[in-house]
Length: 67
Image 1 (cartoon, rainbow, N blue to C red):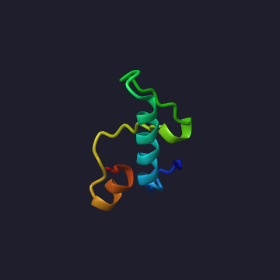
Image 2: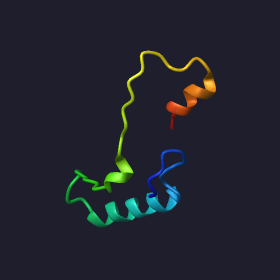
Image 3: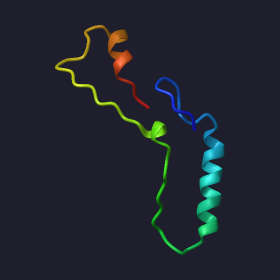
Image 4: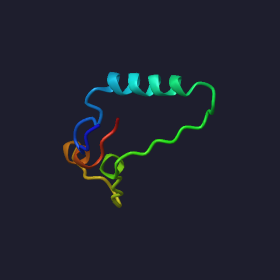
């Protein structure tokens, strides 16, 4: 995981998936509850308040990003 506001935070998603899968398998059936502790920089969220989005698509994409 890498904190990044532009690119994906998971540089190697397959490796993360495998690690999580292996960890959950090693826990067996002891519990169905899972807690993840992530570094603050990895989960920081910024809320921006706009009355309307910028009129040009390119400008709007600069402040709104999906996925």
